[in-house]
Every structure is written in structure tokens, then in C-alpha cells.
Length: 315
Image 1 (cartoon, helix red, strand yellow):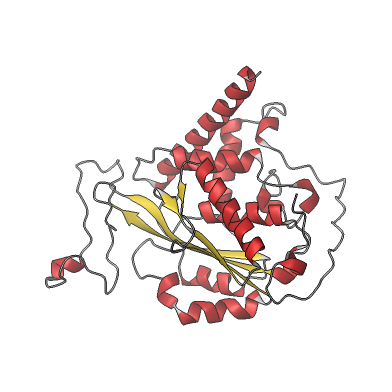
Image 2: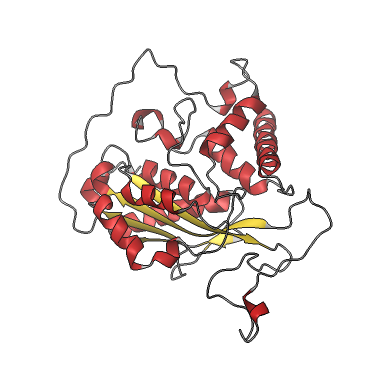
């Protein structure tokens, strides 16, 4: 097990730093619940799953939860080679677990993981250097300028920013207009219009939301209390799903709590794995964002039941 002190080994130029002791749990606090404990405690699986999905999901404005289509390519910079490779491999492994492909070495990253010793100073400069990478200008592609400011000014150990796009599932074309982007020879005004196949139903979704790129910034001075395995799993979770950085997940057993309680969360939990697998296996067909979210909830519940059934028949 690569139980490394991250701040001591992560950055190419990082100084030596000693790990701080893990915080002592408050016995008055109710322990977070994992999926396999819900029925034992008499809690409704569907209601608890609905609450979890509402809490952690952070889609682009007025859009549904986005997913990677087909595969992704993870890359990490400003890290020792072995550390970077470990994190990239971990993101790639989790991607394969949910049915995606992972880019081969040398692929162009659409999941970019950047380590820095002062993320608060670095992030605004990073955004200002290529603002169109963060806000492409198309409707429903990001969470807006106020959330971008929160991303820039966050004090969290790890921060992230997703860019997604509504896609015509039949053609694979982006279904919204992006300023300055055209199709074909760009000689006609119609070349700058989105391409969308129209259906007769107002209830059925005409588009799907695809993740296009994710930026993950790691502040190495703030991750000394977690192992490399924990950090890799945390990054994988926020790279594969649009996670709300302000989500209150204290009542759930999830890797998203790892910086608050490192000793309680060695890696991705059953909640995390079921959420990701349910998200990627969901058939999202409804135009209403609420109805589409319920389709994800139903998929998570089916995924959980499949896991239970497999464990029941395992030798």
C-alpha cells in the first residue's frame, strides 16, 4: 500500500512535511451510513438515495447530470512521475469500472489534474490564462460565473471545475451554439447554429449532457493527512461525476468526507461506487431535470440490488 504523506512526495519541488495526526472522532456525532446499512436501520433506500443524489449532484445550469461519453483521458502535471502515474491510473481504473475506456499514454487529457503549493493564488491565474476553457459561452455548459469565482477562491484541499455540453445523441453534435464555433465551411449563418433532431414529444429528452473537460486543482499543503490511495479515489470521484463542492455529505459514508475524517474512509465506498455505476448505467430519457434525476436514482437502486444479489450467490 502506498501510504505516502502527500505533501512530502507530491510536488516536484515540495519541501519535506510531516503528517498531522488524524482528528479524533466526536462520540456524540452519529456515524455516517453506508448503503448496506440503510435497510438494517429501517431507512428508506429510495428516499435516502434521492437525498444523496440531490445533495451531491451539481449539473450545469438548467441541465441534467452529465457523463463522459465513451471514455476519458486523465493527465497530471507538477508531480513526480510515479505519483502522477498512480493518480492517473486510479482515475482510469475507476472509469473502466463504470464502463468507460481510458486513454493510452500520450493521449490529450480532458481530465487535467494540477498540483500546486498555493492553489488560492494559482487558480485565478490559471483561469485568466485561458478563460474560454472554463466558460465556453454555450448555454448549459457550466455552473456560471458565480460558481467559477467560488472555484477560484475556494480554500478546499482539492477543487474542481466541469465543462459539459448538451449533445444530440443521434449525431453526436453539440446541440447549443458556442460563440465563434461553426460546422462545415462556416460560409452560412446556419453553420453557426446548433444541430438538433426535433422530436414530437415535450416529455422526452432531445439531448443528453456529456462531460467535455474537468480541471482538478490539488493544494498539496492541505492534503498531508490522506494517503495517495485516498487522494486518487477522491479525484476519481470528482472527475467522473459533477459533484457539488459544497455538498453536506456528513451523514453518508463516502470518499467525499475523506479530508474531514481520513481514518473513516480508506477509499471509494459502496455509496460512491453505486452512485457512479448507477449514474453511468441510467437511461436518461426525460426532459424534466427532476424526472431525469429520478431516473438516475432508480438506476442507483437497481445497481445496489444487483450488487446485493451477486454477493448473495457468491461462493
